[in-house]
Each structure stands twice: as C-alpha cells, then as structure tokens.
Amino acid sequence: SQLQVLESAKVSPAEEAAELERRREQLDTEIAQLEAEGYRVQELEHHIDKLHEYNDIKDIGQSLLGRIAALRGTTTRDLYTHFGLELDD
Image 1 (cartoon, rainbow, N blue to C red):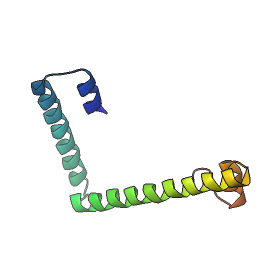
Image 2: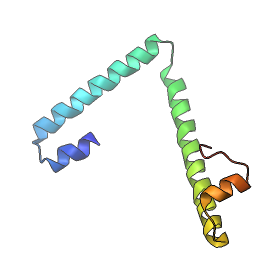
Image 3: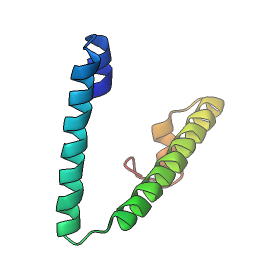
C-alpha cells in the first residue's frame, strides 16, 4: 500500500501528512462523483459490507475445499468438478 511505501522510505511526518491529505482529497472526489451518479454513501457502505462478508465466506469455503482435497489426496480443482462448481465461483 501507499502507506507502507511511505513508511519504508522514512519520509518526514510532514510529507506523510501531505500524502494522507492528498489521498483524502482523492477519496472525497471519488465519493462526490459516485453521489453525482446517484449512489448514496450509506448504500455503498452496505454493498462494501456485503462484499466483505462474501469474501470471508468464500475464503472459508476455499479453505475447506483445500482441507477436503488434502484428506482425499486430490486437488482442489478436482473437487470443484466433483461438486459441480466453476473455478471462478
């Protein structure tokens, strides 16, 4: 991330603050653009929460498939076929 790059470069606090301010302004601009397109911040936050939840569930599912594959001595790819899943599921 940008903050990690800043920290590894040992920038001054003033430079780091300026970078954070620039990033805040960029995000404010993006929010304003989305609002102009008819999106509401609360609606976007709801969708973001749902995406996080989906990703967490998907990660757990992939982990379980990996464990089942290891126990069966097969590959996760083979299990996708066995359970009728697509690789991009």
